[in-house]
Length: 222
Ligand code: DC
Image (tube, rainbow, N blue to C red; front, side):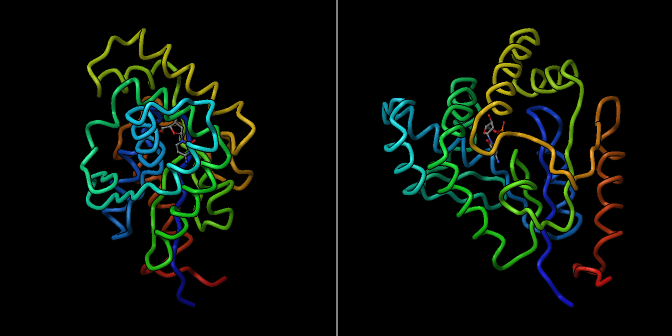
């Protein structure tokens, strides 16, 4: 039986999802999809547009109209390269706000499902194993201690660690307590704590999991 495979990686900010998901996708020859970049792209458009975060109808329209492509690690929004522009602290905060709007989520989830129509994917986000692909072959909930997550994000962006810790805490609280698809571990997801582990070790643990369930890019029939 040949089937397209979905590897779903969810978890809080700074747990290492992007690094790990990108590397696993490369190893497996699957498409890597960073769904956080999609929420960030919509947030960037909303900020530039002067949209109010309370105007949920307008934000939903932006999410529906947004043409987002993620090929080769370059994030394009309506034909413009926004790869760097979506990584500012302002966009991070706004992304977590637009991500709480159910209409925005509906629009982006549809785009996310469309990406997997033709190819196997490694998709990372907050609701991939719970909402986007509840039948994903492999589900991982990637976590790390709060201190380690703040340290990693701070090193990435060059910001002061204490300030990063505060921003992450605020964003995680919003992502976990919102009504629409909050961040949570799917009951059938494998919990992986990346604190104190090397990228190689985490990558190997997840690849092992994929190999145990799929062979030669095809789902293993059991
Ligand atoms: O992974 P990230 O930090 O780039 O995500 C940006 C924001 O988008 C984050 O606050 C959570 C939200 N998000 C979400 O709600 N659902 C997803 N599938 C991915 C990201």
